Length: 370
Image (cartoon, rainbow, N blue to C red; front, side):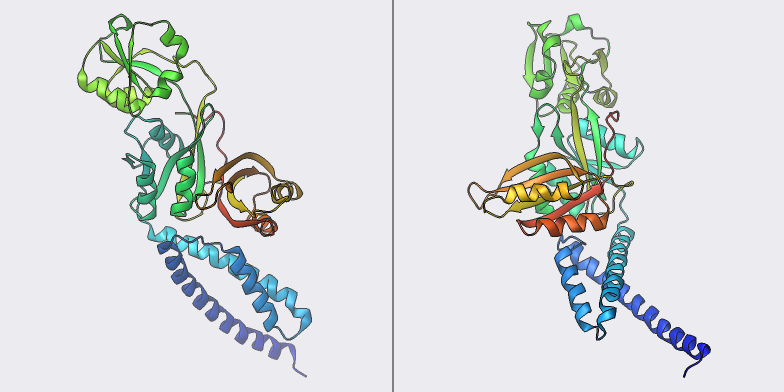
C-alpha cells in the first residue's frame, strides 16, 4: 500500500503533465481564435461544446467519474473562450471608434457619450462602411443606431449585424435635442430658408409652425445641413441640428430645444469583433429563426418565461430566401450570465434554427444623452 508521501508525489507528477497540456491547449485555442476572427465566427459555439462534452464523457471508463469529467471540461472550455477573447483583444492595437455621418451628427454624440470626448474616432458615410471597418480591424469598435423611440427600428443595422457577425458589447441612448443654428451674427428675423434632415423637420412641427414663410430644404442628415450653412455663410440660412453640430461648425444657436417631442431618443449599439462586454452585462440581444411549424413562437417565448427573463423588445425581419418566414431579434433583461444564456439557447433549439447570441452588455441609462 502506498503511503501519503508517495501518493502526493504521484499527484505532483500528474499535475506537472496536466499544466503542460493545459498550456498547450491554450496555445491551440489562440490559433482557433485567429481562424474564427478571420471567418467572422462566434467564439461561443454552444452545439459544438455540447458535442465535445458528450465525447469526453464517453471516454471515461468509470461511470462515477463521468459527471465530474463533464464539469471539468465545461470549465476548461470556459477558460479557453476567455483566452480566445483576451488574445484577440491583445492583437487589436487600434482604439479607434467608427460611426456613420459627419462630425456633429447624433452618431458622434453617441460615441462621445459612451467613450468620452477625447476618444479617437473616424466617420464613414454608411452603416456598411462602419461594420466593414470593425470587421477588418481598422476600428476597434463601431457605434451604430438601431432604434428611435418615435420612428422605430433601423432594419439595415440588424441585417448588417448578421452579415458581419459582429457582437454587441455596449449600448448608448442619445436624446434627440434639435436647435436652430445660424451663422455668427444672424438672428431669427434674418432667416428665410431652413436646412435639415426630413426627420429634423418632423421633430419640430410647433416651432416651424410659427414660421410658415420659411422654405424647408431637406438634407442627407442634420449635421451635413449644419456644415452646409456654415460653408455658405449666409445669414438668411439656418439649420436644424444638434448642439454638437453647432460646436463643430462654428454656428450660433439661434433657438435652443425646438423639438416638440421631449422624450425622443435614439438607441445605439456598440459593436466589436469580439464579444467582451464593456461594463457588467445586465442585458442581452439574440436572434433566431422559427421552424415553420405550428406553435413554435409560443413555445419559444415560454423558454424566456421559464428562465425568468423579461423581453424588452422583439423585432421580426423577413427572410429573403423564404416568403412569409421571419428572423426574430429579441432584447432581454434578467439573469444574462453566460451559463443561463447557454441554457436558453439550448432550450430554443428545439423550435428554432440559427439561434445566435448577438451580445450580452450593460444597458444604457435613460438619462444618458449627448
